[in-house]
Image (cartoon, rainbow, N blue to C red; front, side, top):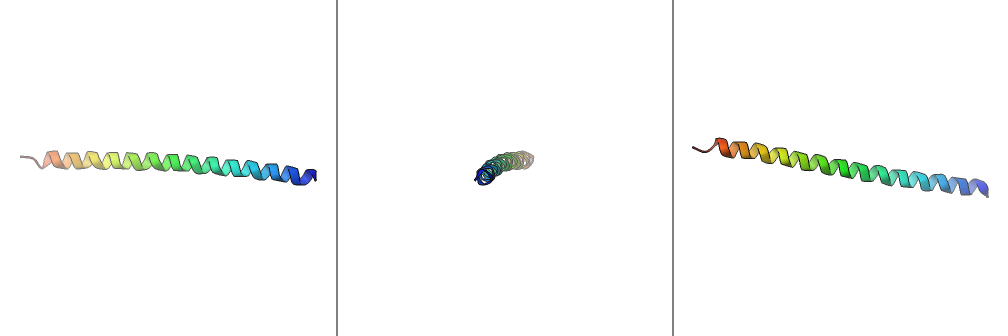
Length: 53
């Protein structure tokens, strides 16, 4: 019975680790998406200002 308890503990730890990795990945993806949109907005601003006469 102690083997199954240890196994459950490892499974629970692996589950927590997977959730932490997923959360970190989502945060990183959100930062990349935000930065990409910010850069695209800056480029559009440059085109808008450059197109003025």
